[in-house]
Every structure is written in C-alpha cells, then in structure tokens.
Image 1 (spheres, helix red, strand yellow):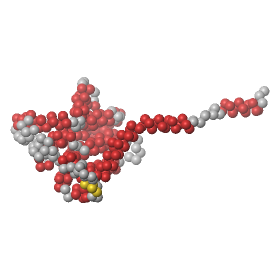
Image 2 (cartoon, one colour):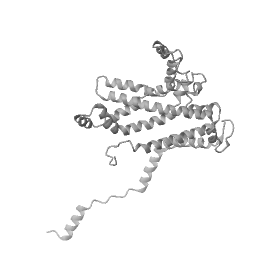
Image 3 (cartoon, one colour):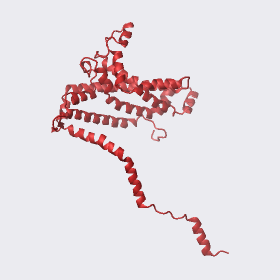
Image 4 (cartoon, helix red, strand yellow):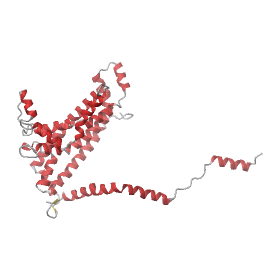
Length: 325
C-alpha cells in the first residue's frame, strides 16, 4: 500500500505541468532588432518621401519662395491672399461642382452595372472584365489625350451628334460643356467601385430576399428595404474613396483642357479645378509658398469632409449585428 507521501508526490507530479523556462532576454532583443531591420526600408521611405516633404511644404506655406532665392518668412500672408484671389474662388467653385456631380453619378452607374452583373449569365466574366477595363487605365495621360481627340471641335463625337441635329461645336472649347466632359470621363471609369459593389452584393443573404418575396414584396421594394441597407457599408466606403479622389483630380483635367482656348483651365476657367490652379501658381508663376498654402488648405478641407462623412455615416450605414439600430 502506498504511503501518503508517495501519493501526494504522484498527484503533484500529474497535476502540475512542467515548468516553462523563461525566454532569454537576449533572444527577445535580437528578435526586436531583426523586426526593426526589416521595417527600415519602409520607415526611411515614410520619413524621406512623406513626412519630410510634408514638413517642408508646411514651412514653405508661410514663406515667399520662388525656387531661385531663399524662402522669406511672410507668416499668414499666403493664406490671407487666398481669401481675396478671384481665380482661387473660381477653382474652388469648379472643384465642388465636379465633386458633387461626378461622385454620385459614378456610384449610381457602378451600382447599377453591379446589379446587372450580379446574376449568373453566359459570358459573365467577359462583361465584368470589359466594364472594369477603363479603370485599369486609370487617369493616365494617354486616356486623356484620346478623350480630347474624340471630343474636340469637328471630331468623331461632334460629327456623330450633327447627324442627329445636335451642333455643339466641340466640347472642350465650349465653357458650357467642358466641365461636363471631365465628369463624363470620371463616370466612364466606374470599374473599381463596381467590383467593390459586386463583392458587397455577394454578402447579402438570399434568404432575406426569398422571405420578402413570399410576403409579396416586389424587386424595387426588396432593393430599397434589403439590398441598400445591407450594402450601406460598401456604399460608404466607395463614397469616401471617390470623394477624396475627386478633390485631387488633375491629370485628366490638365490634359483635356490643354487643348482648349486659354490652355489648362479651359475656356473662361470652366475646367479650372483646384489642382490645376495649384500647379499654375507653383510651377508657372513660381510662387511655391502660395502653392504650398493651397495644398494645405486642400488637405484641411478633405480632412474636414472625411470627418463629416464619418459623423453622418452613423445615421444611415447599417452594420450587421449592430444592436443600436
């Protein structure tokens, strides 16, 4: 018969796991050093290519600098001049018009095409690729040059419209249509948000549509009551990204409007978006301080718009499992 001492030792041996040796501090430090070494290229790039230029731009926004002489400190003079600059006001007006029209129309078209391509049909992969192809080109110079050639005076589009009795006389040189041409170009490249909408539509439970259909709800009612609420996070994501990108439009506006009377900015400043005027001030007039102030004002506005969109999102964006709704 086993003695109590032997039994107690056997129980303690069985119940308690073997002691874990503490990890050596030297090895832990070597792992940390290795991690920082792997992060070094990213850290250097972030400091030298992002933080450094931003800090320099912030300093130059308070100076008078023309690239050839040393910056002269002028305080808030550049920011004060923005308030009394009529061309600056024009650029703000044109940019807001572009953002408020192009972003909603682009998202509506992208969502509509995504709904059409969501159902299984023959050649579905081809259609998805075809609709996404313009977004692969991006806001490239080549696309803008082709677009300018298509919509110039007496070009292909102008001739086709004359056949049906519409004589516009060229879109680029007409101040009433020049900005709409840029909006049309932005809407044409709806492939990226369309793909995101397609991914979101795949996450909508079909059981909800089937239950609503049994209750007698039609397609439009199911779209309003089921699809849109379930798709609201994706809509918000696309809306946020497209709004930020629209504020920064430059390549397409610069190349397309360069063929118009008056150069970049179009006739009567009809396509003078914010970034084009920033470019003109910085690289044509060599007022780098003024251009830097414009850049920081743009950053401030985009930041405020982003914060406002996040604030308003809680009133219309539905997240599954949210008990507060």
